[in-house]
Amino acid sequence: MKKEENQYTVKFIGHIRSDFSEKFGIPRQSGLVDELRAAVVLQPEYRDPAAFRGIEGFSHLWLVWQFSQAVRSGWSPTVRPPRLGGNTRMGVFATRSPFRPNAIGLSCVRLVELRQDPELGPVLIVAGADLLDGTPILDIKPYLPHADCRPEATGGFAAPLVEKALAVECEETLLQRLPAEKRAALLAVLAQDPRPAYQDDPGRIYGFGFTGFEVKFTVEDGILTVRDIAAQ
Figure 1 (spheres, rainbow, N blue to C red):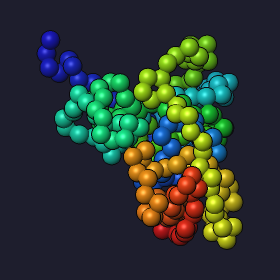
Figure 2 (figure 1 turned 60 degrees about the horizontal axis):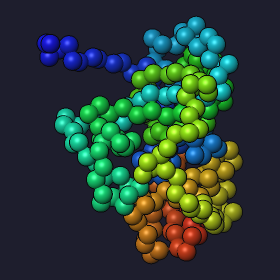
Figure 3 (figure 1 turned 90 degrees about the horizontal axis):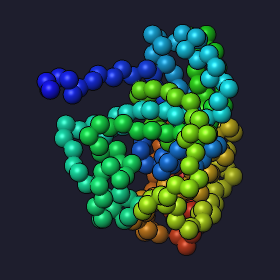
Figure 4 (figure 1 turned 90 degrees about the vertical axis):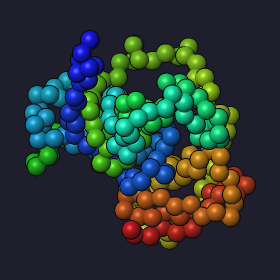
């Protein structure tokens, strides 16, 4: 087999517009924070309304996308999942690590609406996306409950841990700095505990960008306290 026969070029069909300007703070998986809203904006050549005919009959969609900040020339057969403390190595194909032979991600999102924008054409508004703002979208496929849902499936080392969401304390004056429609989403993101599993320093101030603001917080004894919300 010729070397070029092992290669296939894909095109970005669009990009996502989300509230996250950096990787830190993004939920660990899609669907964990339904309050989050994002928009899938297509490239001009894919803005034909006919390409979306019938999509509104599906409640959820699969987004196939590129880990655009994790593209590398080489790859490693093992990675260190944060879920296991960042020290234990597991096979890359047994993880959802962004550092893969092909930097491709997969997210299941809820379809909120198909919006017809006068300039951007068809725009998908979705809930629960775990994507960085500007992430390239490779494809969109409908989620099929009868085929995609497997209640008997096991989750290996990534199975949900028995843990409670963090209690979040945020002064109302700080929260009011955010647009009203973004406040519930931020509180839900914080309750999921954005910190890596191996970090537990009560004296450390963490921060991440969210919808144009820098959110800073500390965590101690199961309580996350928002220290500041400032425009970036």
